[in-house]
Amino acid sequence: MEATWRLDSARIVAALARYTGDFALAEDVASEALAEALVAWPRDGVPRDPTAWLLTTGRRRAIDAFRRRSGRDERYAALGRDLAEGGAHAGGTPVADDDPDLLWDPDVIDDDRLALIFTACHPVLSREARVALTLRVVGGLSSDEIARAFLVPTATVQARITRAKKTLAAARVPFEVPPEADRSERLGSVLQVVYLVFTEGSSATSGDDWMRADLAREAVRLARVLSRLVPHEPEAAGLLALLELTAARFPARTGPDGEPVLLADQDRRRWDAGAIRRGRAALRRAVGAGRGLGPYGLQAAIAEQHDVARSVAETDWDRIVLLYEALGQVAPSPVVELNRAVAVSMASGPAAALALVDDLVAREVLSGSYLLPSVRGELLVQLGRADEARGELELAARLCGNARERGVLERKAAAL
Image (cartoon, rainbow, N blue to C red):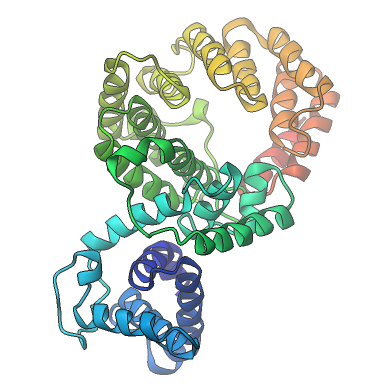
């Protein structure tokens, strides 16, 4: 049941949102369907198609909700007509009302998920609210996970999500992929959401697994859909390139027991050559647009340098440093500066990189994140300052929310 929910919760909410036209109601009835499954499945057995069961149950709960709402007779009648017509509301092919698969059309539901993202990224919401809401309903991330990703308190994330739902309802935002003329306005937020979903999937901020491959794969799929939807937007192609080129290394990123395998230790023969080809092709499309690479395109160019190198030693680190400097100009952030410091350490040695990292420490940025002490610890190891390195790695381990990654840091500290 957990696996079904994790994989398909966004599809279920999206389909129910399409049928009810009410974003918050769709989430509520999806949760009610899950609660009903917790009782029924252990008693009656797991249904042949768990997702279809949840969708059908959610639809029934939605009908019940409309029935309970006084003053909503007209809306209920409209919903009843749409259901009787088997999805005509969304342009689907009419089917019989008693068809158990009424809401389950994989092709239509894929479009629903994209509509769900664009709805959650509507301009009536603040940028922070758009991202938080989409990560919740599309990415399936918990409030704690979103809070860690944005380095803000969990209560702040919960408040953003609650306000976002109320704002969408008050503004009567339609559940749809916007017309072409309106897409560019929302595209930036949509790309950011897909990127963050992928980031959480490739390096989980919490839990026992280092990666959430299902989440990352979903982000790649969404990036492909977006790239087709806006073929002339270089950043959409840049994002797709970044995700393909990064996901190409997934087969070698974990060991037999799920433990992280660092880049230097990965068997590059296991990298996905097909994903690398797709990523490089997308990157060429981004470059070919002739408008210069944006943040995603530049990150894709960095990923490409890793993917085409035969080893860490043969990687063009000088070019990666230059690409990070360009990225710092178009999308400055402490994380970009930290990554640039890592590249500098490979190109020019750990002493030059440590100066950059110490500058971040002095500016008190990335406080609360394990990334800064982790990188500083690694640089101190290379400089032979074992005692200081141990303290930094132990601090990083305490701050790290992912059990697998924490274990790696603890073992490194213990080895010093």
